[in-house]
Length: 243
Image 1 (cartoon, rainbow, N blue to C red):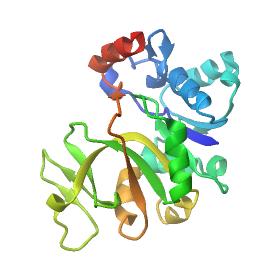
Image 2 (cartoon, rainbow, N blue to C red; image 1 turned 120 degrees about the vertical axis):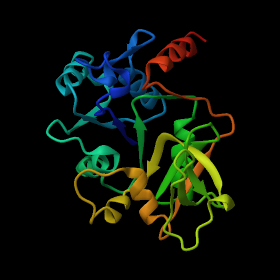
Image 3 (cartoon, one colour; image 1 turned 180 degrees about the horizontal axis):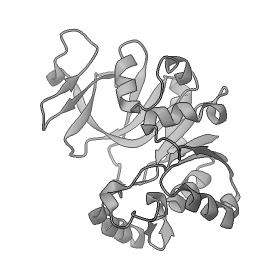
Image 4 (cartoon, one colour; image 1 turned 30 degrees about the vertical axis):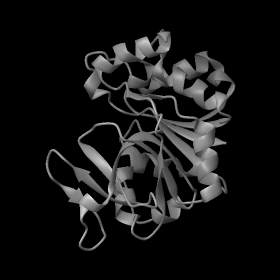
């Protein structure tokens, strides 16, 4: 099974820790974030990974080499010349992710208790274009899904902005979920990306096509998820690992 880890971010929220260190190598419980995610994916049965790099990318290459890729086949999608955001990053990794089987995408700064194998197999059985891990956690920006858990729009409660390609869209009629930074995509996604070039957000991409194809929520009532891309969350992650 294939998976991609987003490890190319600048880690702006973690400055000054990330001034000279890539976010992916910031330690949590004595191990870099990237190591935690690689081992979680390996345990779940993912044996071929793609990792994108940008800020201080050579440090990530050296880290992987020193650990012999943790016994997993790893490809590098090099974005050191130009950071492509989430959608552009996936498209650039096309040569590694193409084929007949779905692939999972995982942010390097997300800790969760989700069963990745179950998420992957749920997607494979239902066969939508994408399956997004979501939950009811509190945030300012929500993805909006209908009663069949199909993506229909997006809403920012702080600004009041609403995005949807459905006519006469009323956000109050839809279920609000926070995206968990983990999703499974069918390889047909690349056909939908043909007209998209350069840097673009995967969420904006999903919103632009969701009225024409199936992008589903994978809601988890018992999901425990922590975004460790900010300093205060690092302490919480340390405590989580102790527990």
